[in-house]
Length: 247
Image: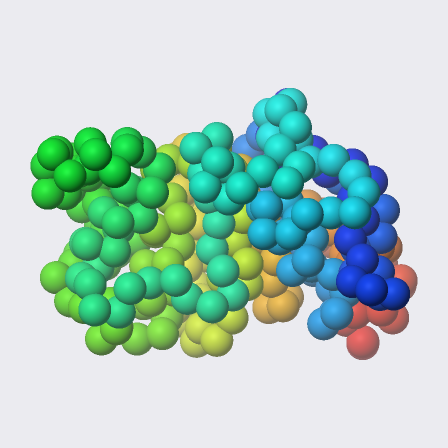
């Protein structure tokens, strides 16, 4: 399998603090990679360096072989890279459907073409398909702000997939979600992966969610990768148990 994402010798410092310290890994096509680690281990800084929110002090990021280090998030979107954030990015006053249409518009066309084109930018059918896939049809006309937190998390994930991205980076998708809705979210992500052979990278604290969803797991501590392997390998790795799991 070819590498969709390649990260080589990435380093990011803030003053005298090294948040990401010479990190290298790749994400293969169709893989679901989990990145775990304790608070302060560098997970979010690593994500933000990959996604153009931060510029690394050292190292290189490639998407499908193309150097993207320091590229703006909007340009990464056009290359098929999408993401979710720890904090929800839904628009509470808009309906579920309109949130999805707006998310799709970020990936296509110029402002002029949007002004003279269809009111929904031709994305209405795609939005309905995504609403049905994420089992939100009964809520399609509801304002996003009226949904439960777990339902908003489902909507947030659906928005990340609106443009059929090549690579999706999910930042703590399970955070604050109850167990029932967590099962729904994992089921939808697994189904999307199975149908589209989609490539995901997932940062998450919810260990069972990561172990059930991901095919391979990296463990960060103090900005470095300390372990890598299958979920089963990571569960019984003594270095991981000491540094992160704590039991």
